[in-house]
Length: 334
Image (cartoon, rainbow, N blue to C red; front, side):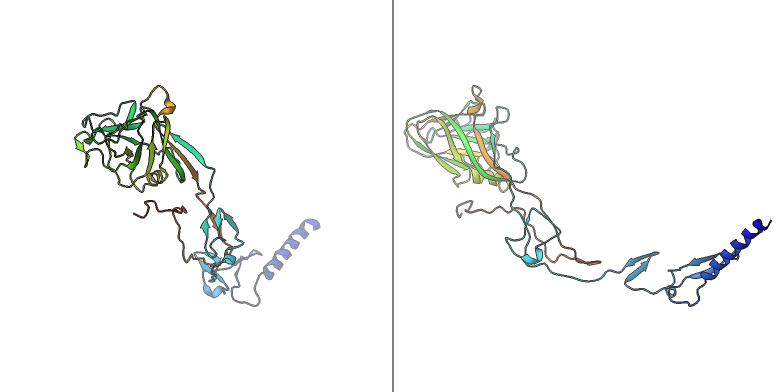
């Protein structure tokens, strides 16, 4: 019996001691309230809803939550030294133009793309002054003749949909395979066609059935894309079309194709090229050889940390759609 009565006495003494220890002796700001439960225990509560129960130092209490108060501070990054040593920088350049961050001109390898459409995809014909209403869209040949009375003008259009997005056009050449030629040479000028036309409808008079050219024989830009001297040597003849293909690709001007023309006297100047409908040897059809690169399209710069609670505001952000620079005037000063 002595052992069973001793345990309750010890327990009461322990709880009583605990209750006494939790009663605040010297109240101060933010001290808790204590409630004696009359069973040897006490509930201790800190009440943060009453400002009289606490003091604040660099903290904020709202919605039942206590948070650190933001500290207002600032710094400027305006020099190369400021931008040096970031937390992270990927494909950006902050040394070429001190004080600015620009996208690095990182580029992939040069890629050759040959666009050589078949009869289903090819768009080519020739305009025939000797037969002003005759369509040659299904012919296997494209005939060029610079003589006034028998003037014939090849007209072609290529889709550029196979060039990937974000590419830079470094070089482009139009290739036509000349299969027959009169001995007399001729300077064949390549021009950009200005309105739309249809391969199966185009004639010397009309670009579409019932829709005439503004000027019979085709409407085209007066600027010469390139000129090639055509002699009697058969084989591939090429014209440099880099600038016009680049303008088409970047949607600066509509892609309505090209027309080949010249002017001369009465001598025989006929030159014959294979068209996209030529079935004997598909490698001899008209083609565009395009060399392009894809630039690094994205960059990331994570600035150094400004400190706990720092507020950051960008003062000036600008971004160019392209870093491409043209060394020469696209239209020779026109």
